Image 1 (tube, rainbow, N blue to C red):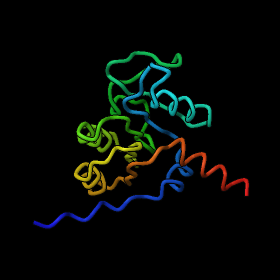
Image 2 (cartoon, one colour):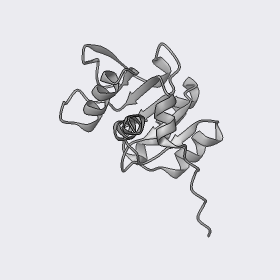
Image 3 (spheres, rainbow, N blue to C red):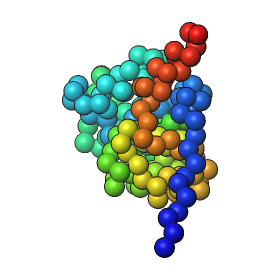
Amino acid sequence: MTTPAPTPQADPIQTIAGARTIAVVGVSSDPYRPSNDVARYLIEAGYTVYLVNPTETEIFGRPVYGSVRDLPETVDIVDVFRRSADVPPVVEDAIAAGARCVWLQLDIVNEAAASRAAGAGLSVVMDRCTKIEHLRWRAQQTR
């Protein structure tokens, strides 16, 4: 049995630099959770950020949506804070919503879901943090 080739990934810095709208899926109201920190950072960095978690209603005084399809506009990046096993339905949601990129956060890898996203025309980034990549991009801008 052969192992399938890994899904080609988009350049994370180019992806974050070219984005304007980001859906943070799996965001938590707990200020000690990484999803909360990253969502706050992206908002403060000037992105239009939509918060997605069916178990929350409001975070940072903003509405929280049940799915990416429920958002009022199409997003550039679907930033996923879910366990690897929970990624496939998020990818299907992102595809149905017309998102441009599925971004799986640090330690989140799901090759099957990444392949499905890429096959549907979405770019894919896995095992990377949007906050870290944005900070790297900003550092490059100051050189």
